[in-house]
Image 1 (cartoon, rainbow, N blue to C red):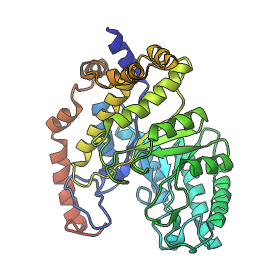
Image 2 (image 1 turned 90 degrees about the vertical axis):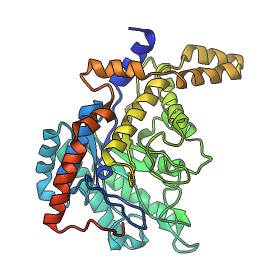
Image 3 (image 1 turned 30 degrees about the vertical axis):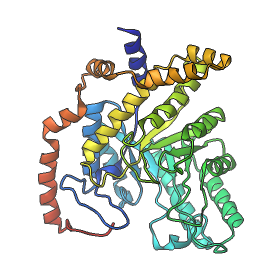
Length: 399
């Protein structure tokens, strides 16, 4: 086995990425949805589709769930866990929903209403308990909280409300659970978002407690932001908890990973490999998760495309010659240092990845294998009939 194959094999052995349940269902924009016949109708469908992706790629053993969407009946939690096992996957991160109910018009834990804040905090704590029941390690928090107009509410008071709620949530965690605090610069709050950037998420996580970390969504940044610098700083502070991977052209577009700027994702993975290399090959525990909205692409095909792109870019980033890199950096050889990254990024790793797949009895081309399986056509026919039987609307509708 060549040295490149060894590096890539070792990299892929410890790389897994979580697919989101909501990525398999019909999703849309604020203007409407375009329905797909094969889109998942319920949690059983989502887990079946996630199982298909994991069977073909070998690196998606867990499924992120959105409470309220995936657990409308909390008495059936054990059934969901059993369905996940039957499909060869497990329940991964738990995502509370504190943005959908009418009570959250002015925010959730940042709301000026004490009753609404208590409702939101209780829901987060209930989700932490749900995670314990499902043996889920991560509770992922994203808040739509913020204000749309100057003077609408006290920015400092809202910060204090968040600190109180996150401390309360942190106190509910088991020893093996982590609280991931996500940030977003805007939308749906357009004057100020309560957790608008990584620094705010960092401060709130530090205030919450030692089991709280920052979650980086690659779509939640302005166009000019250097995301890998944020990643490097959080790594150095031991505060990088996880990722929500997607790509964007303008804002939070939720496009498939690497469809716009694959080199950026490579640079993010490079920082992680570099950090681990400096520590003798010891990698930090990071929750790698996908968060995408496949409005136009077929759901499962888009997920497979994203997963295989993540594998490819993670593998390429592992090929950087770090010894040469630090030597060039120390000597101020800028071009040579940059070329260490460019050489790795431009390496064709397809044969090495196929060799890794072969060693795990996986198809050489997961996307083609999915198409050859006829899975999409089979579930589309079954789910179309089920929608008719259930009287579900399959025409144009608002999201």
